Each structure stands twice: as structure tokens, then as C-alpha cells.
Length: 127
Image 1 (cartoon, rainbow, N blue to C red):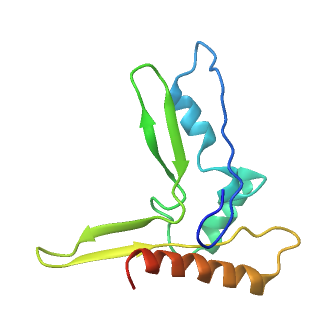
Image 2: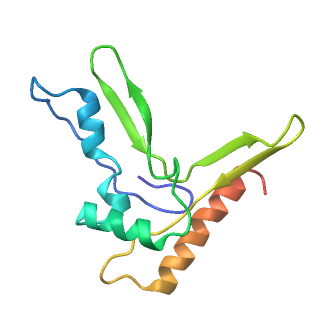
């Protein structure tokens, strides 16, 4: 899929659960997504916990729905802005950006990709 500032590979996954499993089991197994953590997933999550100064909170988590039939549709919260009330007159908006680092990544290019993603968020806010 092409966006204003980047292209993304999109995957639709269809599966049938074992009778002993629920959609919640599926969600727990899938998230955080491997495209966010890296591989091997568990070890990468441990390294992220050690190196990143801030918790990711909702960023890179998931948003979607699970209906009464057990159907679900989820995404990964990238390029997401969160808003909260500071008080009755003020709000704060925050977001996080990043780039996927792989063996042949070039740090400078990844840095500029992250800046492009941040600029897209700022444009969405009219800034």
C-alpha cells in the first residue's frame, strides 16, 4: 500500500483456531507483531526492554474489533497519535515513530525515514 510518505507491505492472515482456543488466545500469540519486534521475537522484546528509555505504551500495539461470532480485525498502531486532556482547557498529543532495522540497514537512511514519518504526523495536525 502506498501512503503519502512511505510504502508498506500489507498481509491479510486467515486462520481457523483449534476448538480449545479462543480469539483472545490468537491475539496474545500475535502481538506485538513480528514486524515491530524483530526476530527471534521474545529475545528482541527483551533487548527492546533493555535499550529503549520509554515504554511503548499503546504504540505498536493493536487496535481493532472482536465480534460476538469470534471474527476479529486488527491492525498495528503505527503512525498513530494519542490525545489526552491536560486540564479542562488544554490537551496534549503525542506520537512515536521508528524504522525497521535489519542486517543491511543504513542508520542515516533509517533516521531520515523516521523523520519523514514524524513529518506526516505533524502534517496531519496541520503543523
